[in-house]
Length: 363
Ligand SMILES: Nc1ncnc2c1ncn2[C@@H]1O[C@H](COP(=O)(O)OP(=O)(O)OP(=O)(O)O)[C@@H](O)[C@H]1O
Image (cartoon, rainbow, N blue to C red; front, side):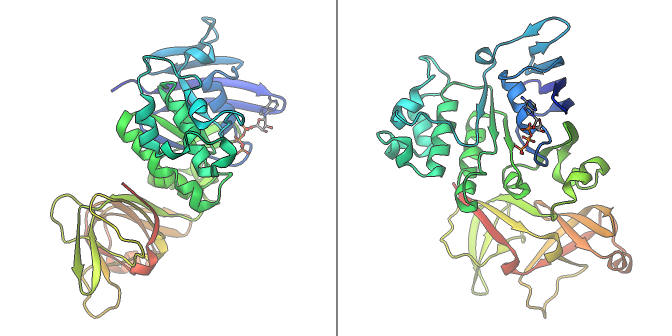
């Protein structure tokens, strides 16, 4: 649709040097890296709140910064919407007034649209302190949307909230992206939070971008691995529910539009409906591979797929398998050799219903 983002900047702040040279694609991008790696500094520079010492920034064809050409577009003209961790709502103003702050007539996104999208109508007459942390986050995002940003940037939008609350914002971010096709960049310390939103990650370390790509690619990238190795590998996937049926006394959730024998058998407390967007996680260690379906076994989920890649990470071997979505499966080298696993082979992924965690359910 539009050109992605090009950044080539250097910035010295005391002992810390930010030296970033990268492209950022459209879509939702998760920015991950240890504390002090420069994530917030980068977002502030992109927003125009701070400026680098030199370099160039181009966003969707517009040059925001070019030291040699003396271009320095001010923050208010950039339309880079940066939402801070704590939301920064005005405490003395009602939620309605907070939302309308910065809203200009003729803005691309209307007030009612934002109120409905973020489900905040019941909050309009309240003050920020009368809203929960999650509600305040939604209002802060709503206020930013009303300023018609071209890119929505969220700096640790989840970290002041407990896990359940902070994850409640994720379906709203997905809805924003689906509705407005707006690039969204999210900084988080929690890789699982990011993977609930997107597979596309940018990894930062010591002021540099050390990886930019899909989580599955980055897991096997030697530079990005220096950061990702601190984390357990995880499959976190977003699945739409297209059809629900009863199979052997359990509910089977079909996640592919076309008819398929692949479905998830899940232990779910809440009532799920067709059209729901389910975000689930499963550890690569909890999935087994089999060359055939296995009848006399208690493992209920046996999903047919194709091995798309086999890669090593330290002493571990990971198969990436397409079962209608891409999953990583951790196996031993000896199992891989004994089964003669190869890319392109048909395979079954076996896992217990109880090993699938439901992270979020949204519409
Ligand atoms: N204005 C400044 N003057 C001096 N040093 C600064 C300034 N701003 C940031 N820094 C330093 O830059 C480094 C990167 O900070 P930054 O906040 O960008 O990291 P971060 O990756 O967002 O960290 P966190 O995840 O903890 O928020 C830190 O060492 C910080 O102390």
